[in-house]
Length: 343
Image 1 (cartoon, rainbow, N blue to C red):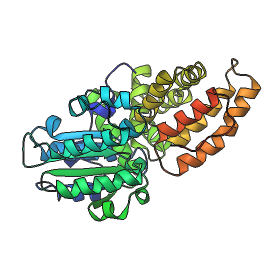
Image 2 (cartoon, rainbow, N blue to C red):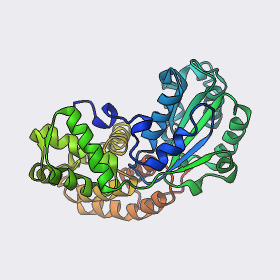
Image 3 (cartoon, rainbow, N blue to C red):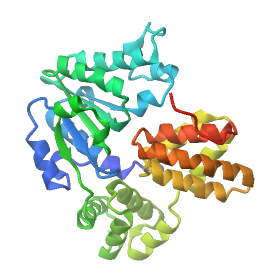
Image 4 (cartoon, rainbow, N blue to C red):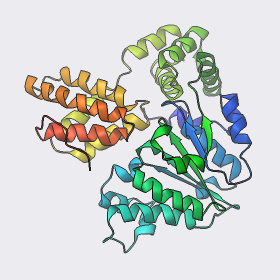
């Protein structure tokens, strides 16, 4: 999809969030730094809600919202972290630091810098369930030290993975799966803004097929509109028949098999962040696409299926999806038949 993604173009403002209870809870936090825990299933709008709040509370959200996906740290090497333009200013001259010290340093420095446009800034930590417990303990101390000038917002699909001291310092904001009617209303607003012809059956079909994943519904609607020029029951049905990402998934398998793990990691990242997948769904798709690849022999496919059982268990534990899927592909490419314990 070459055009700007509708999930970005039509990112909701705080007043436009489709869940009234979430909108009301976040509205009550405007004006003072308050740590928040946004919890709910994938694709329900947790990150979008956090960004909407930042736009509401900061005159200059580009400067005073620091957005970090936990995979930016725990799924990357020291070199990748150090060369990230968001972090290189914090880590200049600190190449001898251990990875754990680098992460703590970036978080501490991010929290300690003065806000640009107001009395406080916001640090958004996406996929917080993947933060290791020892880092959560360190993060708790950072939250205590900078509670007057820094607001922490955590998004997670498994809040039980966060330690009690983090929970006790955050105002919980549960986010339920949006109803079909709520998804339809959002799609209708976007289609009107884009001047896309649609009918009620088409919107309902897309909303129902998304099964509560608002991000997936919006991406499907955009794909249908770009391919067919309208969003009707028939065009949506045709699009959903071939909307899969088989080519990209096959490319990730091929890259891993060739030892090109940076390319495989980038593809997985795109599928997880922009494609609307959660880890378990993408694992299922990886296996399905692998079975269809003539370049893979039966032994390779069998080995991938054997490794997938352990990967499925790791994904159930709630840690970073990309990290575990890359762990699977790396083990598969190395010819292993079991996943080793992760560091």
